[in-house]
Length: 452
Ligand code: PEP
Ligand code: CO
Image 1 (tube, rainbow, N blue to C red):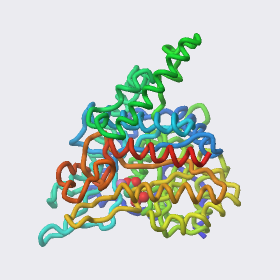
Image 2 (image 1 turned 180 degrees about the horizontal axis):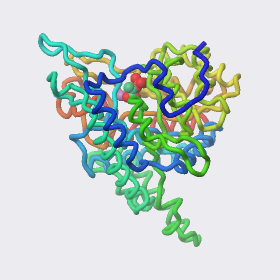
Image 3 (image 1 turned 60 degrees about the vertical axis):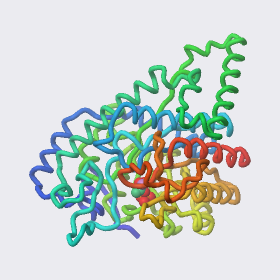
Image 4 (image 1 turned 30 degrees about the vertical axis):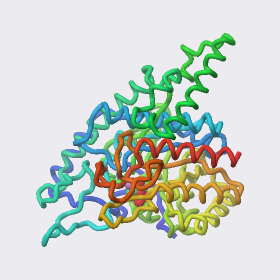
């Protein structure tokens, strides 16, 4: 059993062991950066986090599907309006494929506007003869392989805040200002996607949507000024890893008196920091945001139930998303007892599938990669297991980019190891490119259609 927890405050995590925290060289400078951030405006509003939780409640009851997608790690260097727009396009395309083909509303959450920090399996990395600190994401240090570049710099926390603010600003403009209008469904596809078989499949689906909109207009429905058709909600999320940063952005919601982590709408705990007696669970148990927790192949029934009790003791639907990342070979063995136990406990969780992190391997070329077929296979196992247990396979959690990168093997283009060098641009883990992402959405839509 985890140690009993009593009073919570935004700083109470400091009393618990916190894994994966950087070794900040100057405590005074860290303190000063965190003070600076706590005086800055919130990035998201409590009411928005509440509406996401409400939407996730619909996912928990089997009436909607969660699509959580974006970068493994955002970069301070590759940061532009184009990159944000392209990422949004893919998310919108995937969502429209899922809505139209599977017939369920899609709750869209980006790994974006704050997804900077990375947990590492080793605190140091060997470069030549030297051991230098590992790269922990741009919010902490620089990826250049020198001792100096890898020194944690607290001013990066401030820079991450500002980059998140400008990313969010653009996301809000794109999602509410016409770009996401369903009548532009054709315009969301990029040239390199539209020329591919999955792109053509997308185009014919977009034609059907056009016809449906024309039909609605002919019936007298005003499709032009209906916000259900002209705007979308894309919420933000990231792994709540660097707890000082999260604490500095945790504010009281004046409406409800609750503490809300205003760095993003949804926060999750990663595979390496889900210790029941640890600081990350302590921090996230006290915020009113919807929260997630990754569950890897070593997860047990007892641990999973304790996580549910710790993070959602009041059993609020939509409050807790359990993100399984078991690996394609393990999922059908590890997941069934967890589904059964959570169902029997009555905890109203969202079950989402991260088919990426359990399927990473190093290719003979030395590149870290994932195979598209393993990704599809894990989702297949996830959906089959839910069907067998009578639970709802509520969501998909993926790492993707809108660019034509070559980081994951397979897919329509049959990317091979020798192709990986062509455009391998990720800051951390290999991401699906835009074509592979649209292709994946069609696969998932088919699995869901068969499910319902
Ligand atoms: C991630 O989501 O980028 C990640 C590191 O995942 P996990 O904690 O599941 O390994
Ligand atoms: Co990752």
